Length: 111
Ligand SMILES: [Cu+2]
Image (cartoon, helix red, strand yellow):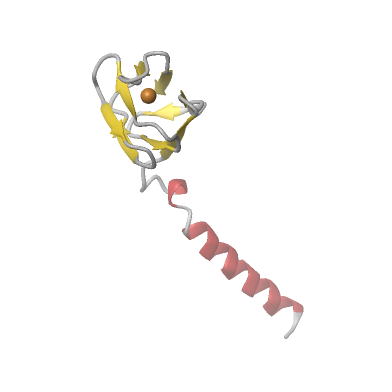
């Protein structure tokens, strides 16, 4: 096998790799994960966009909720559970846990 055919083969592998990354094509919505642990929401992703999906994963030993102050979402999360919401519009959404009012989070959604 010559150098030229090796290069062609690795090029084909690279194309296959890129084809497996759907967000490059805009076909699949972006999923942003926020982990809950030790009675706290993990940090929100730096850049959220409309039509993106936020997924909370409760890694804590307690039941929590992710409840928007504007009630645009209210997600009940048993220990080990995960739940999602779709970001419908741009703006700032503060949210809390109904069981633990000291737990606070904020989503800043860009268009
Ligand atoms: Cu809680």
